[in-house]
View (cartoon, rainbow, N blue to C red):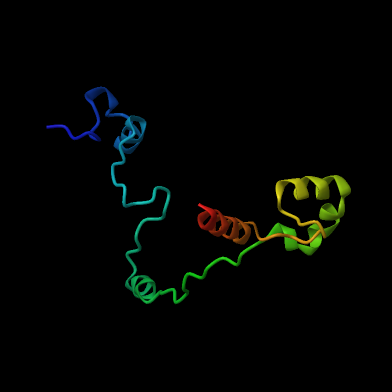
Length: 114
């Protein structure tokens, strides 16, 4: 029987891998294509087996463009400042508003009034 990746009789001249990729079926999904073959040298295998990464995943630092010193000139532009005030990102004094905290505060007020 033929597997989905086995070549058809007319495709024998082409590699089976390309015919599988044309069909959208990965022949060996666990192998990344284009990598070098596994080494046969025992000392290289021992070096690869001893390789380890001790790094840990770290959270990305939060970025807030309103507090970016390099964008300060943009936020000082009167047209931009007016649009930010109308959208609720900046208060009347020109200071940045924490939108999430403001929304939570409005939600609590709305729940108390309801």
